Image (cartoon, rainbow, N blue to C red):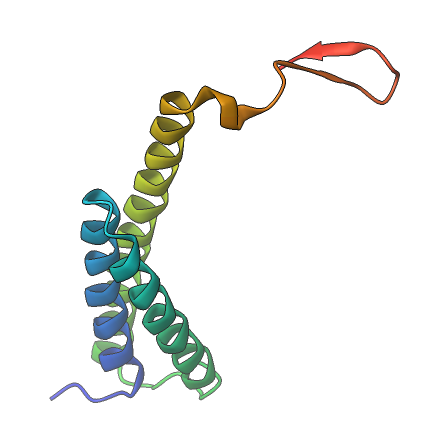
Length: 112
């Protein structure tokens, strides 16, 4: 039986991240706000738990690595989705982009 306090936290973070992906995909910003708070709390708990020495049991280490890999993949999907949503919203409301040209430090205009 694999036992380590980090494993349930990683599992919960994966579940919350998957829920964040779904909330972002369906533009449920209120749900996403709540999930972001839960994610932040769990991440803090995991950070504290990671201060403990890693277990000597290779099976536990492998399980932690596997869960961390799954979490990393889910977080990458969330970041990609968030970037896509922002890009779509910017294209839908071009006025939010600001001026098309900005001045560089040299005083010359540069294209965006």
